[in-house]
Length: 309
Image 1 (spheres, one colour):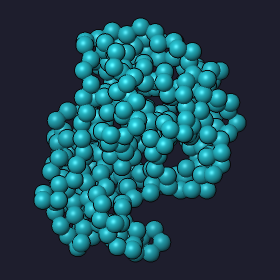
Image 2 (cartoon, helix red, strand yellow):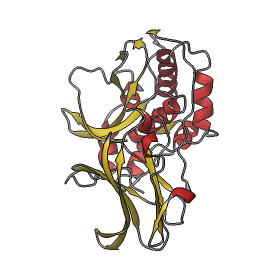
Image 3 (tube, one colour):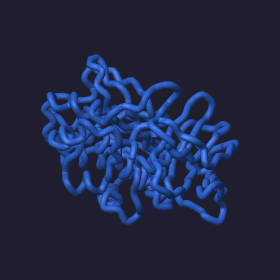
């Protein structure tokens, strides 16, 4: 399954681009030394938002279904089966994302991550090579309940449940949080001090063009590559009701293809590694900040967002 999407004419990128460059960086998982910093903001109460497939509300075409009944909540879902490869294509304006679908009839959930607008959602079947034909398609006008809806819920890329280990751990970590800044700081501190960069996994996946991260696996193994860090952070934060995006793109000046997060809190968090202000999307990079001598605050680093999930 593919962790990447196709946006305009940009081709799908291999997972090796996320990993290979980090083989030369000393990432030891030493953490940020417990430097939580200062936080402020209103009282924090965790909340859990779900994503669900509704068979009774789904459009059925050619053995496939598309459920758009919760579009205002920031996601759509689809099912399909068969021996051919299937993709869920989500298009809005001149942007499109595609997701490799399950072919056993289980639903695939995709975020409506391009904001309000007119979306076309299609189930595509592979015919030969890179050629696909639409089996089912529908066009909907989407007005999200708010801009955060796609980024507070599980989806194919950020896949967790209320009983997931990462959700249970996140709940433990934020139990004493007085505000959202405290919650983000606690989760960030845990990840950067507990998860180390997995060079062996980077090598193993160097020739793989599709990879979906399992946040529970990352948590329990205590190691991962950059997309694993980003998915774990997003899963833990979203599960507590804190909006979090997974972003992939280029890290300059070396052109490393990388993954990181953007968070949005009602409050502030000022620490050595980050300044998170109220009412703005702020970047956190748990992969780089797991290394004590190479952090996302290095002045010569520039982040170029490409895909957002």
